[in-house]
Length: 209
Image 1: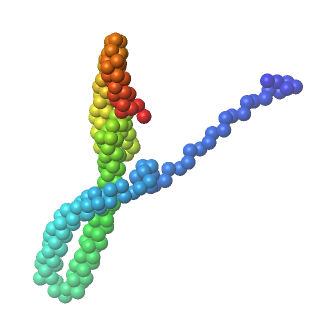
Image 2: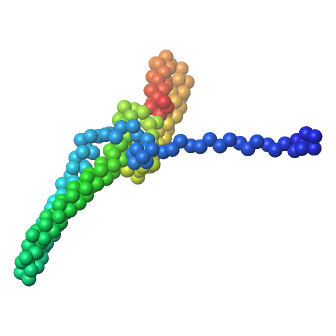
């Protein structure tokens, strides 16, 4: 559009920046509760720490005695440096202990993060299984991108979909049967047809929210 020989440029659309993703969201996803299944998550994390602690203990003991043996061999040639060697052994022992503690804390946190993903998925799966058990065949499992057990999602949804399809087939069969029975010139037949249609309606509620 021109105005006195000047061309007015169209205003560029305003781009709204997306909100920053917090570290908590990156680690745990958008699930609000960190402890989905406290007993499972803590047990898994503690078990991982115990196993790693046992391996570290064997490694640290081997390193410590190897250091002591090396120090003794060194002191045989330079006994006047005993104070220096003992101080080095204490520093090395402190570093081994500090590194082991830091490593164990890291193992606990990593195990906790991973168990959170698995526990959340298992919790969600349990709720959907209860839905199916109570007759809600339309229920579907939807896991978060970072959740574990994602392979179960497709298997569960395929099962629920097959169950719904089979129920719909039964509904159509019952409706057709009810219509055929209702056409019979008999009061009892019409009453039976009404019951068949009522059964079909109850089954329909299993596959529709």
